[in-house]
Length: 336
Image 1: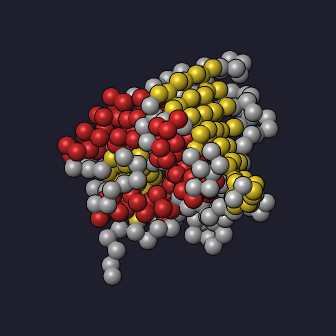
Image 2: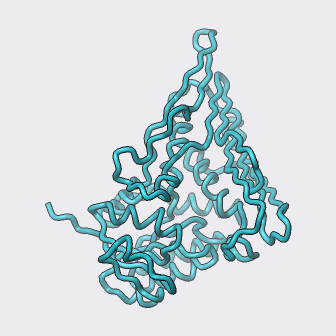
Image 3: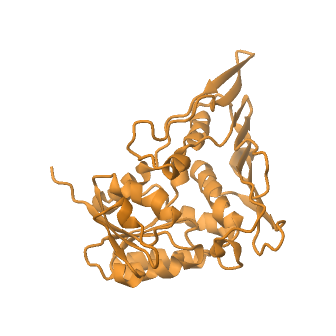
């Protein structure tokens, strides 16, 4: 059976393009990696000899063979470049944060409908092994009714980074948009729209223009409270997932290996790709017939390829994508 491949172009070949996008497009037989944009240093052909390296976004968008464009440029350019791609007749897959504001997100979805193209948010962290461990614990019911959930994304980078778009005051800059959007999307995927949301951001690094610490306090039906924390100044990382329920507790470090494997050049189709390291299991403690039971839970493999399979199914088979328009609005209402 002949596969109707989606011809794809990527707007940047920095870390995002090299690590999170091209390896999956190139190794998925339902896609064809046709082109990237490289304004100065040309590196893509070293990894993909048949690829076209365009000097500008305009050149790539003028390529009639390209159907899908991945918007993986600086945060404050996502909206304008997605509009250009849609008006050029391309479907778009947009890196997080999807847009700086709800109104801009709505413009993109409305424009997609107007030109008959799909506008798809890239939220790969729904396919992290550690997050899916949390999801499986919630689904199995052993902790009872969830009462309190903490999610963290910790880093230690006391110096101002070299990526200007991340470190200067501009739309969608700062750690809440950068890392908090991942965790907020995960929470929304589990529990839907929060009933209430309280946000606090602050700046601690010398000469920083953008928030390097942020926390969200969210409430949901049935009394559930969720705390999201992201920080650039945590020297010793804390549990990334801490869940307390009426009958148990689950704790887990951030253990997904996909990003590190991809940086090291491991292919997403390698048999050991996404496998959690030994001794990285989460700890589930719960009551069973009045007795306290503890289990070490090894996560299933993480697999970002599932995101690209979902992109294909939406474009070719009209199968609903896993991130909805409504969920993006809920997320941005809180972030902005």
